[in-house]
Length: 107
Image 1 (cartoon, rainbow, N blue to C red):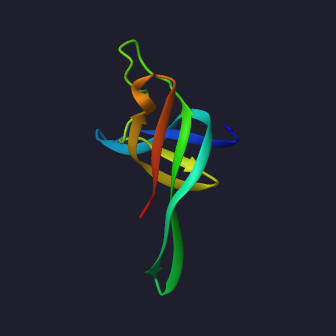
Image 2 (cartoon, rainbow, N blue to C red):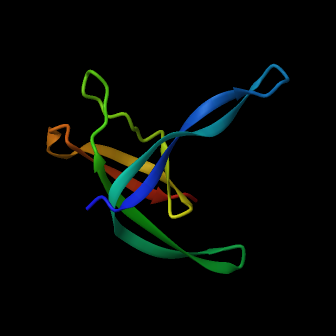
């Protein structure tokens, strides 16, 4: 069932060389998932119509010693070349076996 690969990226702060910092997204993990669409919509952007879809992804649980999931809603995912925000991360049935990730199309 885990037949799609998604990449999880985490926001990091990187020195900008001028004494400040800039925000950057860096690779965190590559995971296999069962990905299903949850909704689809169209929006007008820059004079053209764009289709957007949201997904849910089921992945194997990965967490810390306190059983907290490694991924959070502050992370983002790349699936089929498109970037999605993680809208939610849920431990399915609180068994620390599977996580459900809500993938929301980036605006």
